[in-house]
Length: 239
Image (cartoon, rainbow, N blue to C red; front, side, top):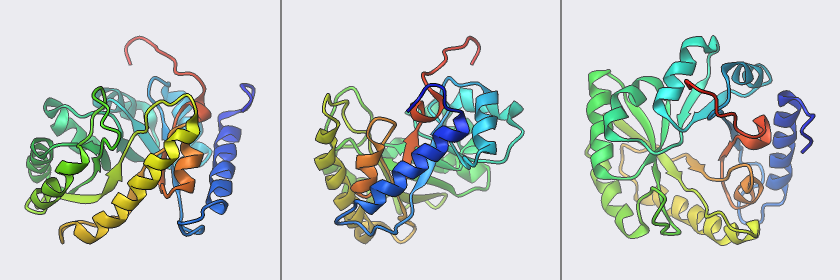
């Protein structure tokens, strides 16, 4: 993708690549829709506004405080996605700001979100982050602990489980992501059957700028794309 392309042109290129990936699906319905999340970490509000004006309705942020700061000046209506690790001391602010929290990885965190949502008279939509590759440096619940967490989440009335999220390892050969994404899709399908009655399983969030096409081929319906839309991150002070 050329560095000279505008943000709008890059968004269109990503959407085209998503459509082509859907057409290559073999075990997932080709017409199942995929939503694009524009990941704006370390990018200025002006770039976000340009992306939103070009049709990006979903904005993904990794850090709660950065999202709060940007929201003050964004002057656009969007759906906010928290895709980074959430610390318990930031839960109150996250519940206030985000429409969907992708990164729930423990019962304690789910309980804190439930408690904060109750105070805001809100039902907070969440995804469970699964560390299927068992990477020690990444967040996410291990597969063997997932069923217990699903059972406990059913007892929390102010959160609504809407699906699952995963982050693939940073393989040298991106094709190595495929088995993990396929296994995650199978887990997502199983989760629909095992999830508590309070759940509304509809999202499988996987795939980033380097691997989203494979993720879509293997069943993702939320993809988190930053660099392919905005270019390299800008590490500005005060953000």
